[in-house]
Image 1 (cartoon, rainbow, N blue to C red):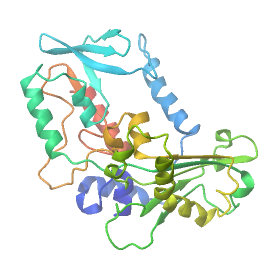
Image 2 (image 1 turned 90 degrees about the horizontal axis):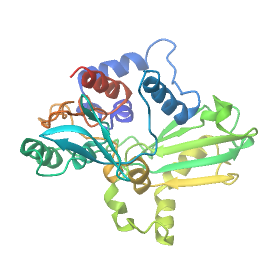
Image 3 (image 1 turned 120 degrees about the horizontal axis):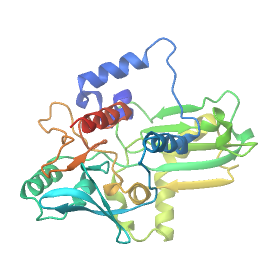
Image 4 (image 1 turned 135 degrees about the horizontal axis):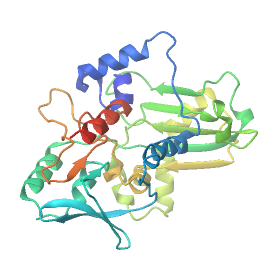
Length: 310
């Protein structure tokens, strides 16, 4: 359950057999280790960008908001950016947004079949929960020498659903592996509740993130995360020079994920299928965790390959 949940947001009973076989085989491979990207998340983004820009005539535009997909004569032909600029597409438009935002980019009434699929999927496809994150910058002395670069805490017991709020917390200290991620003499800590935070608890704080009530609620919901950090680094919080708590509202805002969701919670054998990489709107394609084959790097990479060959 834990291995399946950390990769795809569902317990083992709801995970495809092929995915479980891959995970168990890889997890127990002789000499198996956890990979960290050199340069952290920035390194991942830069690698993805290089995969595009190394091709002649291709570029990547960061911090660029797409307002809607441009449709002409019943076909997706480009995107309209915030600010009014249109980028035209010769072959098609591919969305890597989450399920709801991929639909929201197309105005209703343009394609009846697309609207029918939209209504059916948004009604039938449940979403995984969101996250609470904690980011700390601490003196190097706050991380014991014998602390690993990552640890996972399950508690207070293994009983009950694996996705219970605060039950599974993952703590990473990536600067133990890549010192460039923190100033000399310091470490960075990233810890999070693994896809187990219900967004409904946070709806009352939408538009109220500057209030003391919101800050107090973040502190309350982050308590299991700070406890998990303290398991291996008991002095981390009190010695921190940087502390940030991110909520599902943060997730929704910065990642443009509907209600900060981790992806669709489509259990294997449930009778509900993942949306395919093609859509009923000609010229409009999709990839990422909201399409076949779901959440997790292997699944998302597979969706990209399927989309490229659709």
